Length: 334
Image (cartoon, rainbow, N blue to C red; front, side, top):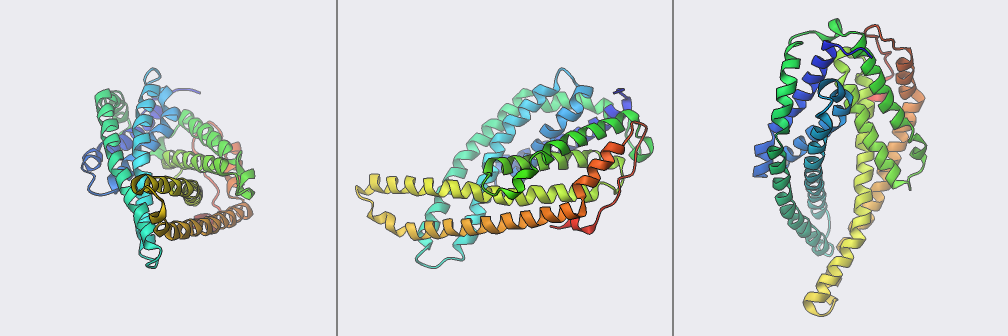
């Protein structure tokens, strides 16, 4: 594939945008007075990790893998904190819905999650300090800012060239193929790990489509929406799978804590109704969430959403930007 200054400038603009978003959340993550800065920084980390393999070899072939490792380490700490924030919000909401008999168990679960989040904040701060000490953000700016300056203000659909168009085709094709390789598991709700991987691949497909959307105007929007919806629906399923694995372990831990503290386990009886009720709730919600995902997937299949994107990739040449055929409104569901 010919390497062009337009390709390098385009990729630099994309990466710098997400780097700016990440750095802009640092103080909010440190202060930890609200949950959204952690969420936004985590998303920026994910986007950078996903897109560095796409553009990195053209921009900084000897450095981009090290950059990606730095974002992976930071992202892991942010991910654990963000997941706990989400769990806390779910349990808070559930606590408002249960009766007096169930409240002790749900309240105990909420207490342990808050304690866990407090401990995780120290981990987040350590990861953030290591990231800043690595100098990756400054190094990226040093490399990418001059490249991005070459294309500043350009209207991308008017200037995209063969090399950039071919990179878009190859990148989207790879991410789409990886994603569709797991579609057999749509009808297998018991395959928790494979469905989680499918969610991750939907996310990578979405990020790649979004990265190249400037080249195709509004044409990629239906596919971006479908990938986002798939990611969100499978994310809801995965969150409930995590709960269904965690709650039995949590009950054992609380039983053992009670036994150790009191010398007997009778006080644990107050906690059990709430924990059992919440586990039953998660099981029912998992079934509902999975059914919603299956129905949505079948709608995409009927509308030939993924087929139409694949067919466009097959037709796409290396001589400029091509239009993507529009698909039905069913892709915008959710």
